[in-house]
Amino acid sequence: MNLQSYFPVLLFILVGIGVGGGAMLVGRILSPNRPDGQKLSPYECGFEAFEDARMQFDVRYYLVAILFILFDLEIAFLFPWALAYREIGAVGFWSMMIFLGILVVGFIYEWTRGALDWE
Image (cartoon, rainbow, N blue to C red):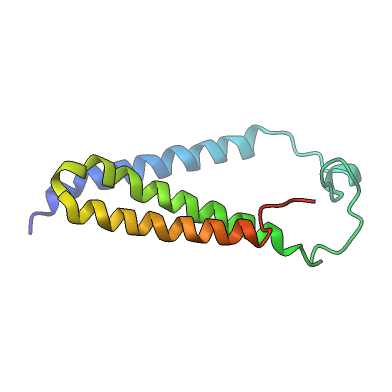
């Protein structure tokens, strides 16, 4: 096994770590550090923190996040499929149509259950 072909990759990783670490080190050395009570106080969207950070969230936040991940993955599968469309033939086409059909059924289910309605 010839490990010399991996030298550029190792060099790239070391330079990346060096540039990132160097920038953090220069920032630590040159930046002013004058903490006070106002800077160290909790701050959230212009309001004082008024409740416990461990409060329960509405389940719709999670549903929207899951829908985002679902459709993001759909796009991640569609791009390579579209690029290889001519090579995969009819089997690849119908496989993707089944996949998209399942996603559409899930989307319709979420829509009818009211997951997309925001009050």
